[in-house]
Length: 258
Image 1 (cartoon, rainbow, N blue to C red):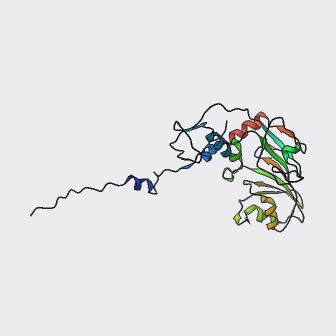
Image 2 (image 1 turned 135 degrees about the vertical axis):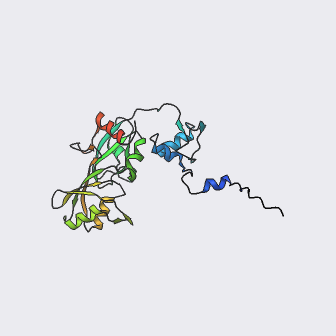
Image 3 (image 1 turned 90 degrees about the horizontal axis):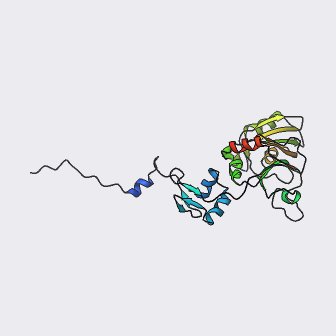
């Protein structure tokens, strides 16, 4: 009787199965416009425009709108020189002016103030709020400055209808549920019986007003004083100034841009 051979052949593993296994070698892909915003080439909207005009290459081939890429291995290149020099303004938005999208008899920033070159606001303040907004023509900074994951500081002065209690401060500082999501912890500095400063590292829609209402009070006045190292200081209401060379340098450094 012949003995069965101890040598056995293994079934080859399908490459498809290998690629779908949940291990550390699996490709992690993202949409190309998000990747371009993440690395500072453009905003997502500008990325789509550049891709549609054929000015973006992936591994030497023209990119397609909405395509997925692997940031670890795919090489993204932007063709041509950027058509503009960038400007950065600090602007003091008055109360009663909407940031963008004026309706009816409303007035927005670009209608209320004439800027030397075409710019847009980075982020927004609601109509009833006032204070610092950055105005620029550099769409690269929008995602990196506003996305909560980067945790850039924004400081506000808030005046209440009733008054400040320690319980009120504790609620805001330690985080609370607003729109079914817990807010991040904040830093509160009391300035009087009804006035305090608050530092946020996120910027959800009407967040401070909603937090105050959830804590049992009402905002009477809200002013943004600072965005990271850029301060409002004594800038006149409805006016703007160029960022200093040092402010601009530090802003781009914090956003990992050049």
